[in-house]
Length: 97
Length: 227
Image (cartoon, rainbow over all chains, first blue to last red; front, side, top):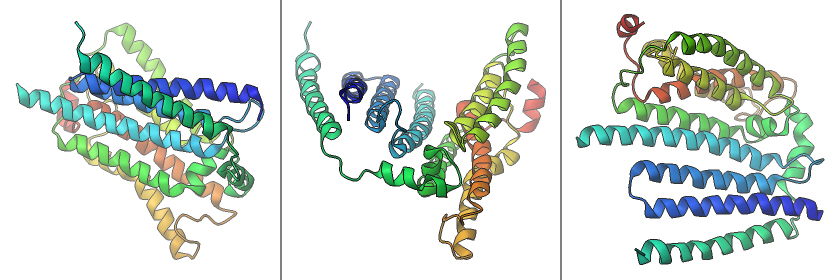
């Protein structure tokens, strides 16, 4: 594996880790449900970054398809969980008044 | 003012966690990998009926995951519907937005069809196509179409369940004829994947648009009044 591929993977994967940490910090520190939900989504984006970085094998080599399929699955699950959480939040707001 | 928990304890814990994660990432991508799944998957792609490696993993090698994923999407929608009716929606769009929507929605539907077909050999597939259909629904909802262009609830129910239904029926039929659950016979794989992906695209698009409405769709007569 060339150093170019390694550098790309570390840069992309490192940004993924940074996103996970920022999301986790926001999730722990902020009380409002909507901010927590956004924080979880930022964490999820970080995890997808990491998986895509691990799948990368150079510009001329096809990437590892298994992590890519995992990311696609993950995006759909994240979207549906977010939609359900938003619906819960809306209902909580309505009943709270 | 410095609050110790928020500004010192949690950040230092997170920095430590970041160091640990970064170190694991470094070890994971520099270490000796041995046999990776990638080689096995890429070697078997010609047998899968499609030439895009990601689609062959999603719809063939790990079809079980994709079936369950569609079920997750359906379950989330059922959860949203169980929380009550959708809101009153947005007001009718002015003519500029209305004209843009009228132009973009057919384009989105066309691109969804393209995405679905191209997924066999290039990046694309049922989820990307479904997302485009969902986006068309969101656009209609934003422009004041109360049900985001979706049919009434009794026709919407079969539509959102279609993906899981076709996927599961295909799997069970294949198991009955002797191949095993979701083990496609060699010559038919391409067509079975295409049928499943088409059904999945329609369901995903309808589910995403219905989830955006945030509740059970309004009954038919109310739609006519607002239209």
